[in-house]
Image (cartoon, rainbow, N blue to C red; front, side, top):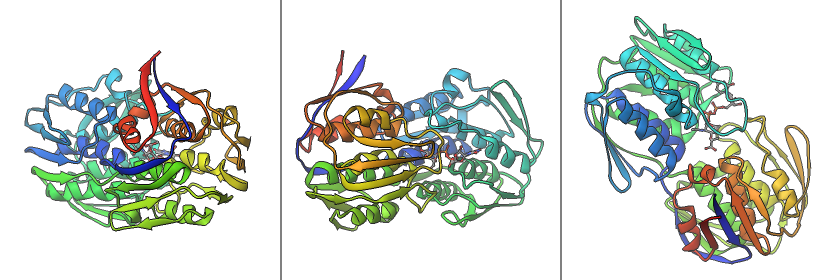
Length: 417
Ligand code: EPZ
C-alpha cells in the first residue's frame, strides 16, 4: 500500500508555487468538447482527476494532447455515446460531461458521478436545470439519460448556490435557443474561469461571479486558447501550513483576493503575512488566539479549507468552534486529530477544538481529499513520525505535494509498505 511518511517539527522556508485550480480545470476540460475546433488550455495541474477526465474524452473519440502544463483538445472526432460507469464514478466532476454533451448533442447517457464521501452529494439541481431547458431525464438505478428535442432558454432559480449545478447549467444553456438566466448562482472564481472559456469560444455569458448569470444561446462555438486560474484551495492549504511551521515561507502564483476570507481568519488568530500582488509570505507565530469558523458559499470561508484550518485551531489558545454548513459529513479527519492528541468535542455539524495541544505522530488515514491535506498539515507539526494511508485521495487534488513540501524543508516521502 502507498503511504506518506512525515517526520514532523521541521521549519519550512523557501517558495511554493501554486498550480492551476483543480475545481476549474475539471470543468474546463469537459466544456472544451462544446467547440468545433481545437481548444488549448494552459496551467492544467498534473493530478489524477485530470487523467480521469482525459480518459473520458478519449473514450468519446476526442484527440487529446498533454504537454507539460497544458492540454490540447480536438473535439472534431467525438462520437456521442454512453459513458460507462467505471469512468463516470472516478470523480465527481465527470458530471460536467452531462451539461456539455446535452448542449452539443442534445443527449447524454452516463452514471451518477463519484467523489469524496463528504456527503450524499445529490445532483437534483443539475437535473432540474436541464429539465427547465426542455430536456427529459430518465434514470435506471444510477444510470441517467438526459435528452431534448430542442433546448430553450429559461429562468432557473437554484435552491442552493451550487457550484456544480451553476456550471453544468451554463454548459447546456450556451447552446439553447434564447436567453437563460440562472438566479442564486454560485459565485466561486472557478465559475468565472469557466464562463471566460465559453465566451472565448464565442458564447454570450454575462454576470458570472455574481448571483445572476445570463446566457444567450449561440449556434456554434469555436476553438480558443485559455488559462486555468491559480488554485485558491491549494494556496490556502499551504498558507495554513506556513502558519503552522513556516519561517519566511512564500506561497507564490496566487490571487490573494480569492482567499480573502482565509486571510481575514488568519489575521484574526494573530498571524501576520506580507501580502503581495500574486504571493503571500508567512511565518509561524509563537501563539495564536482561538476563533470561530463557519463555512459558507463564496466569498464566505470555503468548506474545502475547513479541514486543514482545524489543524491550525489545535494550536490556538482557547476554545474554537467550527461549523460546517455545506457538507453533512466533513469532520472525518477529527478522530485522527484526536488520536494525535488534539482535544476536540464533536457534534453533527459543529466541533469545538481546545488548544494549544501538542500533536504526536501516529498512523492516520486520508478519508477524503481535504481531510488528507489536514493529515499532512498535522504530520508536519507532530512530534515523531506520522504515516498517512489512502493517499490516492490527496494525489487527486494536490500536484506534486511531496516535491513541493520537500523543496521547503519538510521531511516527507511517499513509500510502499
Ligand atoms: C464543488 O463541489 C467542489 N468540487 C467541492 O470541492 C466544494 O466543496 C463544493 O463545490 C463547495 O464549494 C468541484 O468543484 C469538483 P455544490 P459541488 O454543488 O459542485 C448540495 C474539493 O475538496 N447540492 O456547490 O459538488 C450539496 O449536497 C471538493 O475540491 C444539492 O443538494 O458542490 C452541498 O450540500 C469537495 N443538489 C451543497 O449543495 C445538487 O444538485 C453545495 O454543493 C447539487 C448540490
